[in-house]
Length: 487
Image (cartoon, rainbow, N blue to C red):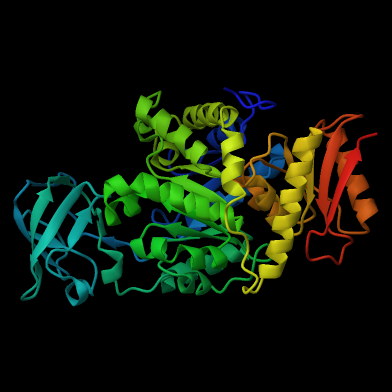
């Protein structure tokens, strides 16, 4: 049954799309924004920093021209390990085949595979599994003696080019973020990128090593959950990061595949408890790299990600190298809108109200608890009164993310004077970012927000709106809840 007050054509779950050779032209980018793309991902595992900087500039200019707050996220490559080249034609590795892994080969054959990782022999143990090509091929280490590792192919196939190599995260001796990550980050901080994603995070320490200013002065930090250690240390990571990405590709290699759907639900629930956006990623509409329509299983996967509580869903190769990126965005938008319309609000709110809120022992614990309490009250008031919209006046965007976890049926209008905050809301569920001229006396700010919402057509005379704000321009917490009839 469709939830009362939610239309099947209103989408609340956001879409983050990776830009690549198939989508980096102005015409295609414009079409993707018009089709429903809310934010773009610049994947620094491919291409050069200079190319990505130019693409960032192009997206920023285009989004301003279209009057859309399209967020930009730079995805740092992290300690990515690759195999020495197998050549264009590739090499077939059948099941049961024995291979040797070494760190000093400049090309790979069916007998010897070069792995571009100097620490290959230091931490690997017999019984460890190493994967190639995003898990397409698995080998198990059977001998660690000598100048290499002997392994047996468990799941074979053909490898071409320089495929990625997945080494169990607890065996990796490379720090995250890497020195190269920090060099890349400096370039993007200089041009005001909105968000930055850290690859292969293992603990909150990895997040803090970025050294950027807290958002919105600096970029919103997105921790990619793709290792077992990250799952184990999730609470600390959420305290340090501004959002998380559930990178199901590498996470599905590190963990038993039957565990992955349950980990997805667990991670999203923890994000909701902390008021952090959760981005579900990897192979969501993979068949649409070539096909015009997704598989039935992919359509169900997208809907289930929405039902799990994802704030945003991410597209990778589908839009970076696919045959029709605009069609992919339009398809994803329809799938998300339909799932949003059928979202089980009643059961969801019962779950949310049982989740743990901010810990007062943390540095921002008091602020978080005040915001949690105020947003809980605002959501209940909006529900009881049948409010048309919830207006949030925010400095950092946190109040918007906090109210969004209740999945209110009415629109969430996020008013912020900081343009970067408005773009960072591009991955926050249900948020419509709107410009606020500045922070002043509460009465003045609220009057401006209501008038702007009415002028933009979000509310009409006679509507009831709920407003969350600070008492004045000096407030650092959300300490005022108001109910207003629009006149």
